[in-house]
Length: 419
Image (cartoon, rainbow, N blue to C red; front, side):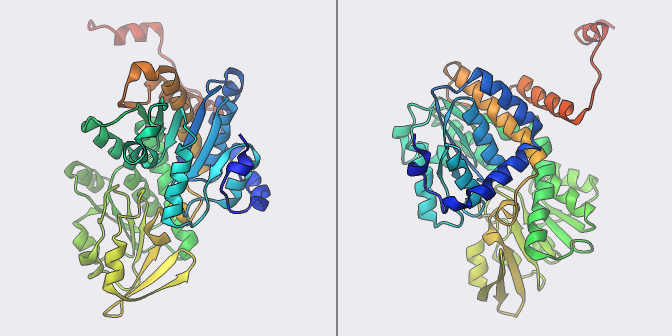
């Protein structure tokens, strides 16, 4: 493979900056470094091709290099045109990885890059939002037979995979990395919570303290966003459709109300549902002048941008990553990052120490599928608990934290029904 001649990136002269970014995150990803050391010795992906679709920034780039260190021929594309970092893409090409990704490309080129990544005929895939799986099970089923399986990163992707599985159409085993304990407990909660406000603050340069933040959805990502908003001094309102999660939000100290009511109060709106049109025309109609809209779900469908444009009399870019929509009555509503993932489109995504655990799960999850795909069959499967626990143990060791172990008597007690 000639990565340089076969890749499609913006500017190879940007590579030095990309290398610096990758080197920085490597220093803060000790769990993935430990897995890389084993991969370099054992070469679990020797002779295999791996295609990756993830937000193409430095942490993802380092995961690609770890998979490459395991013996794989790696091809990567971005899972969002606004989160690709062109310098990182160029650096990966210099490191021998085939890349099809550019920042801010048109939808047709974005789709073409996904297809090119799959046309390398991979044995394994790492997917984000079910982007590649959807193509494989839709317009390009001819590329399915060679693929052993893969791993999925996001809540949105798991929803799509389980829909395929329910209909009996899923054709390969996919590890639900998103559902692992070391993913949703830390990445979704602490990673999303911090990175969302990193992106919002970078885009707006406005204070959060004293404002009202409306968090739309109280899953693990919503919990993290609400927690960080509270920590920054905001008043927090949560909207939900799930009664159990709504009670949880109430017990966590947040106001809970329908979106049509919350829309009247919010200064910031952050959607984290994985669903579409959770903020739409009836909500725009009652929002305060100056309200700021943002999304932290995978696709740019949670805020209905089409209806926002239809309700406005004018629209302009007022600052990088901020569009101003003027309503008929003169109110101004501001949309961040085109309604795409604000933490990646307007920021650098989750902190490296958080993605260290998630991408460690991706690496070992992919290894597990590669070794066991013939016995697994086409289904969505959880990350085996022993791999989840191993990643947590490596993390504790990296932090210099020790924990207790059960004595033999305690083990026997827990295994017995006799007191």
